[in-house]
Every structure is written in C-alpha cells, then in structure tokens.
Length: 190
Ligand code: 2AM
Image (cartoon, rainbow, N blue to C red; front, side, top):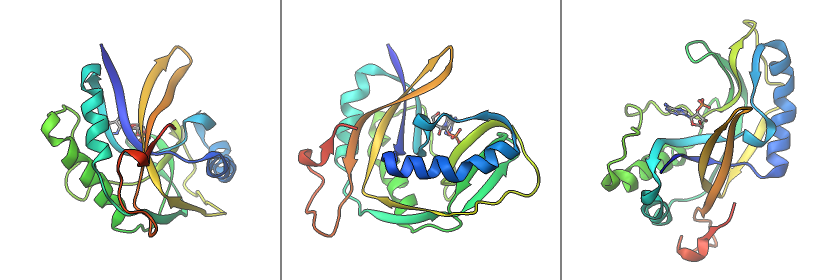
C-alpha cells in the first residue's frame, strides 16, 4: 500500500483563521478553485507516493532533526502563472526555513525516496490559497500574517471525489530557547 506524504508547516486554528480571512479578497478577485480552510498549510518537502512500510523510518528521520524555531511574515499575495496558483508568501524569510527543508531532505536521503528536493535555492515558501486560478494583474495582501514556527508536521494527502484531504500524522517540535532537544517527548499528535 502506498501513501501520499509531505512535510509542512501546519497552522494552529487561530493562524489558519487569519490566513483564511486575509486571503478572501484575493480569492474572490480570481476565478479558480479555492483551497478549503482545513487544507491551508506551507509545504516544506513533498515526498509523493511512498510505500507505507517506510512510514516508521520517515517518522524516525524527522524526529532526529534538531533545528531552531523561527518566525516570518506572510506579506505578499502572488499569482504563479505556470501552476496557475494563487498564493500568499513571505517577501523575505530567515535562513532557518530553507535550512529546515534541507535538513529534512538530508535526513530522508538514506530512504532513497523518489520525491526530490528542488534545485538548490529553489525552495519558494508559500501557502496556496486557490488552484486553477485566473487572476487580475493587481493583487494585494492588505494585512500581513505573522507566523511563529515552533513545529512542523508529517501530513498524508488523500484524494476524495470532493478533492484532496490532508491529514496531519505527527508533529515535530523545533528547538526553542528553553528546549534542550527534539527527543521523543518532542513529538506530538497533530
Ligand atoms: P502547492 O501548494 O504548491 O500545490 C500537498 O499536495 C502539498 O504538496 C501542496 O502544498 C503542494 O504544493 C505540494 N505538492 C504537490 N505536488 C508537488 C510536487 N510535485 N512537487 C512539490 N510540491 C508538491
């Protein structure tokens, strides 16, 4: 059996609500398929379809990561022409974000998954808010969203007739000033 997996920054309810709220205006201005509220997230690493037997090793690889927490602002709304995606994204972000992405791929390296990281430096953090979108030239995010990142999630994607449904499987805590290590106590349910 295979599962479709990705690692993501998964917003808590309050942040999810904020992302939802500030993105409505752009979504309304575009034609397309809005991402449902429950699915809003920022992908870190997309693994694709993976043999379910590898899940324990994938979980263990993520649990070994010891990286610091960080924060950034989602402060731009953009339209990505080729994937026809309406996104909100940070104009700038701390090096800790791509470093976390790199650490994930490095930890997953021995598993020889078919999903591949983008070319070096190609990681473009974003939250997709609508797909198959057709948008006006002028898009503005009026209120930026402050994202304090303390953890990340392993998420499975299930395609229902109604569309994709994402289910967080495990949460991994990042190091905080008052945290010593990301040991097994640092892993929680999502
Ligand atoms: P997107 O939002 O830019 O479409 C679950 O499908 C998540 O994995 C989505 O956030 C999606 O990013 C990302 N994703 C899906 N297919 C992908 C691919 N082939 N490469 C990279 N990311 C992908």
